[in-house]
Amino acid sequence: MSVRRLADEAVQPAGFAFSEENAAWAKATINKYPKGREQSAVIPLLMRAQEQDGWVTKAAIEKVAEMLGMAYIRVLEVATFYTQFQLKPVGTRAHVQVCGTTPCMLRGAEDLIRVCKSKIHAEPFERNAGGTLSWEEVECQGACVNAPMVMIFKDSFEDLTPAQLEGIIDRFEAGEGASVKPGPQIDRIYSAPIGGLTSLTASDTAPAKSAAKRAAKPAGEAASTPPSNAARAKTAADETNPTLKTPATAKAEAAANAKVKGETRAEGGKPSLEDKNRPAGIGKPANPDDLKLISGVGPKIEGTLHELGIFTFAQVAGWKKAEREWVDGYLNFKGRIERDDWVKQAKALAKGGEAEYIRVFGKKPR
Image 1 (cartoon, rainbow, N blue to C red):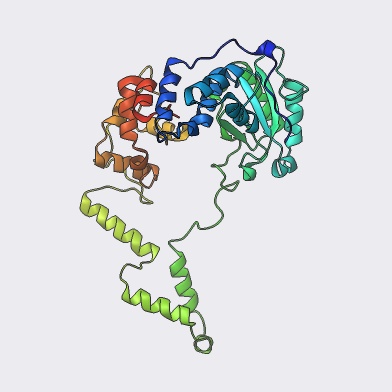
Image 2 (cartoon, rainbow, N blue to C red):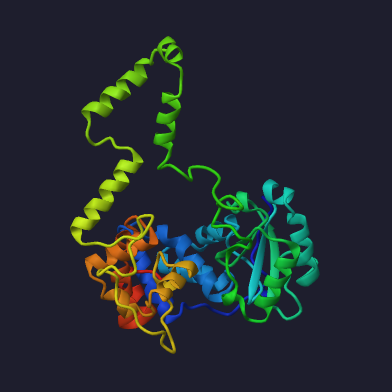
C-alpha cells in the first residue's frame, strides 16, 4: 500500500464541527456501543465527517478523537489506513472511483480511465479547474458481473461504455447528479443475465414433463434399472409426508387458501389491483414525498408505488396489516416490508423529516 498523508496545511481548515443534524446522529451512534467501547464508533464518525465536508480534514480527525476520548494518533492511523477516506479535497460535485481490478480491466476500465483523464484531470486525486470533479482508480467494487463500473459517492454505475461515462460526468458537472440512475446502464436487473432469465423459467411444468418422460420409457428399460436407495427413500417420504408437494400442487393450494381469505389474485399469484386490501391511492401532489428515504425503497420501487397512488409518508404510515401484506405480495418482497418496518420509518419521516428519523433510528435515512 502506498503511503497516505494528510493534505498540506495550506488547504487545511482552521476547525471542524458537525452540523446540528450530524451532531445528533454522532451522539446516537456513540451511544450504540457499551460503556468503555465508544471508540468503536471511530470509522462511522470519520465517514460522516467526510460526507459533510467532502474529505477528512486534520481538524475533523482531532474533533473525532476528542469526542471518543482517543489519542489523535490513533484516529490518524485509522484515517490513513483505510482508502475509503479522502485525505485531500476532492470534487465538490463528483469524485469518480474507477474500478481497475481484473474483470473491469478486461471489460474496458482503461477506456473509462482515459475518459476521466480527458474530462477531469490527467492525474488522479487532482481536481478540474473549477474544483467540482476529481477521480481515482480503486480496487474491486464487488460488481464484477456488471463490469466495467465506477462509483460516485455511494452510488455505483455499471455496464459502462466510455460515452456513457462522459454523459454521467457531464450531468454531475451540471449539478444534475441526483437525477442520474445508478446501477446497470443497460437493460439488466441488478446482476441478472443480459437478455433475461435463461433457466428455471418453467418450474411448474417440470414435474409433469419428468413424469411424461418416465412413462415413455420401454417397460424393459425401466425394469433393467432399479431405483437407487436414495430414490426409494424419497418416494417413501413423498408418500408418508403430506407436506411435500409439487410446485403445481402448492400453487393450487395457495390459490384456494387466498379464495377462502377473500383475497383476489391475478395470474402468476400477484395480488389483483381490485383486491379489497389494496391501500387507497391519491392523485399525485405538487410536491410528493421522497419515498426513497424509506430503507428498502429504491427508484424502481418508488415508481411502482407512484403507479399505485402512493406518494406520501403519511399514506405508508397508515397502512394496516392487510394492506402491508397486499403491497408486500404485489412487490414480491417476501416479508421485507415488515422486516424493514416501513410503517415506523414513514411515521418518523411524516412527523419530522430526517431530524425525527435520526432521533428515532440513530442514523440518517438512506
